[in-house]
Length: 251
View 1 (cartoon, rainbow, N blue to C red):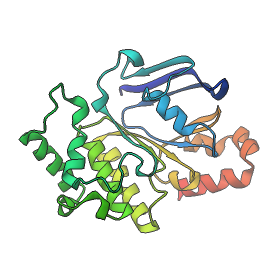
View 2 (cartoon, helix red, strand yellow; view 1 turned 45 degrees about the vertical axis):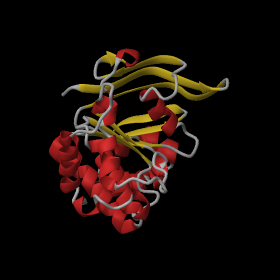
View 3 (cartoon, rainbow, N blue to C red; view 1 turned 180 degrees about the vertical axis):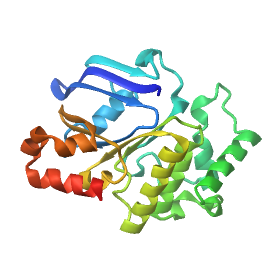
View 4 (cartoon, one colour; view 1 turned 120 degrees about the horizontal axis):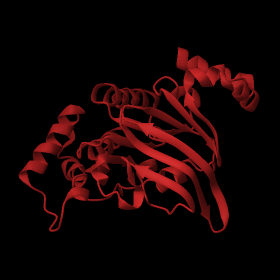
């Protein structure tokens, strides 16, 4: 099992206010980690620090056994930010064009789209059963369809890790179910490691094998089974919430 992420004593400050304190955890290949915590707990901040989008104030981040500042194989990590914030829905691009953008991070200049890129994008669209959308404008798609297109864009570079930030907020229950099943399949069949930020601790228990619960500090990191047995977590959450999370996981 190879190590994908390791953070050690990671702290992040925004304007002299500490938003993350002393976070240490690891992600190995094939893990499916539910990253959970209340509003303002620092979940998105943690992900952005790992991706180098905001600086860590102290501590250490390693990606694929490299120091983060020496790491440059960003194609190995696919990231779906919150609420389609990376795509202006009025952006005049087709689905195929959006997916091919996912290959740009690996290209040296000049960054040109090749025939091979088109083939790769087409393969991913086929795999996700959305090739019928390829010529449609992204602005004409439903929330669930846009989400699948963003997933295709993240997958086209063959990542070993996918990070999702609240992927199901804009989705109706049926789309949410099919989206989760799809990422679960990517995890199980292709061994892609997944970190998924969610509010819905009970729901994520159905899919994730590990729980990373933060509230500025690291509250819990480990398996769902251990979480369910932990008296400390029972005391922290109250038995009712602990039970709700565990019931869904054992469901």
